[in-house]
Length: 301
Image (cartoon, rainbow, N blue to C red; front, side, top):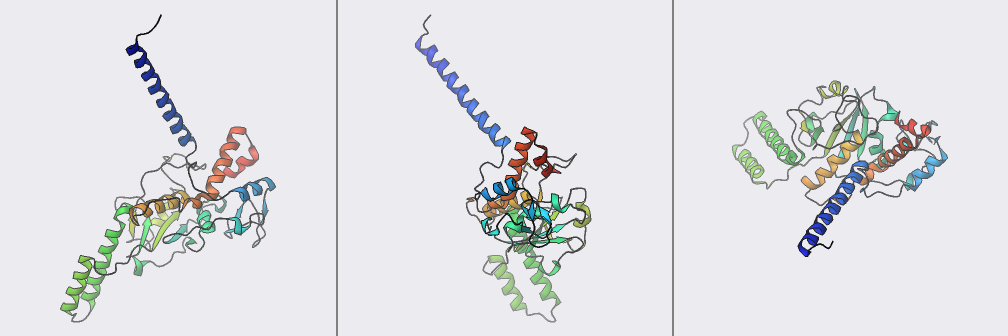
């Protein structure tokens, strides 16, 4: 039985619509299964070779490690440092690591390996003094006083203004004329305002963060909260939502948002190589779980 033209066209339109929906569903599913698939990464051939040859020696401490030494912050012997990407960051990063955080399970070392000139790792209670630089430093940590990344510049400028006023108030018989000029320049944006120079991350399980966060040396710092994103970390913390990111994920996503919201530049993968190790290990462990490879799965523990 033949179909009339209007009915035929309608059915064809419905069929095409279902096909498009199916394609969109498959694309979404693929992205969900592999959230790191669109990263612009350097060749990971060096990691593939290292994985095949197995553990190697750290040239500093002599320890047997896979890919890198998590205590010396250097790649191992079978991972030539010149074959690793070098990432340039727009600001300095301090990572405060909890003493009970297992070195081999922390992703903070990834940042130190891939951006060594911009990243420092400290083990609590060793914390730098930030009090005199609170107008150019911020701490990434969620809470009721946290601000969004796009508001960082505004709040840092307010701190500069407050510091100028405090300094003038503490000076004997301050020059009223000078004070008015300084305030005028700050308000109309003619002065050179110090921008964010350093960002701090806490590296620990969420149950251990309070000890570091409440330390008086971190109190009073500008607190920044990241946009909600889902982790793909294979060591997911039991009982915690999937919005709790690993340290390297938090660093990466902060920089991406900082690039677009503060620097006002289009993001073109400038910091993707921070996930060089992370993305490789993610794929390795994902494949191992599917194939039941117990040796590779040891990386998750």
